[in-house]
Length: 446
Image (tube, rainbow, N blue to C red; front, side, top):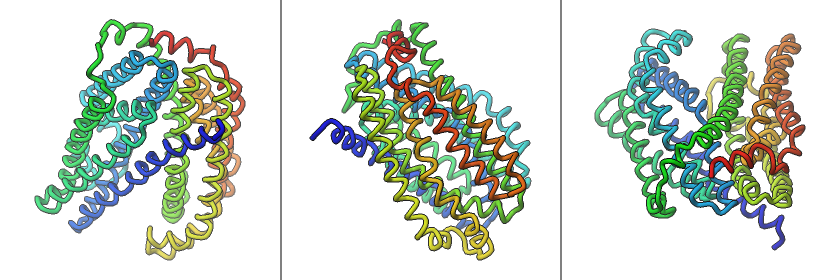
């Protein structure tokens, strides 16, 4: 087996469990919705949707804890530096605890800001506030899980990420049934179930670290963990990823908001189509995350040839998957739409714009793959700049295409994906630069 085939095999080995873990996530949301839906109160369903949206937005903003940890651990793995691997996870876990406690302390100002902009009815907001007030206490747990999963991915142990995701979802589903169906705790039961499930999963994660990675068996060096240069370098990498993520959140929030301004029918149609876009992202993101891990390892080894092979393999296989998804959407989406809504009016409207959804995997996959490669190489300042430029291009495209209404909105989104790929492609040569800030950073983080 030649080097290229070996890299391709590793991509699939890492990506497979990630894709399965990603696909398990919507299942939990469906169960949450089903158990609350059985109570027969529409306001509770609205509260659950609003509460889930709040935490998705808040926690998505801290995704750098996963991505930054993956990159730095993978690079230390490539250098065969177990002490640095241990230090990276220790710093990330401590940062997760600090940020999680910070969210808990500021829960009231955060709630006031969020609920002042939702526009939901008082009944929905009241129930959503209850959900929020319970689940916010799990912020340190959730953020620590992000750091832990980043470590496992950096170690190319994605099967354990799948194990943790299954523990989280199965525990949550069982507790949903107990608290909501049996005890009739309503949305409070869903929130408590999530809180306990995250605690159980975190304990399982620490057991995996102890049993399979001997995390607690080696000596800990507090002076090294808290070294100023190391902490500063960690914050710099995470800062860039956070800015990039916030731009991404804004872009999709803008898409939703502009769709809503076009009317309820356009909003509903776009919501249906975005389910397919999200589904495709789960698959392609598996290859992107796998690319993070093995590109990080190549950078730790300073292996230019391996980096070149990784880029080629990631784009070829990501492109093939994107093509398969687009073909599947073309033939199956008319049938699948009926599983998402029974409204002929909404389906007719979604069908009018369905070709944009069909094209999305082919147009977007390069941006996803580049994200993974740049994170693995810790070229985070380039990612930040490229995302900010792409966001400006996206908004300009939207402004120029407003006369096309919803077609113009989808066209602007496609231009946004292309701008992300082109702007990162401009920096592609930096992926082979092993003497830039990534090496300086990892030397400081030793």
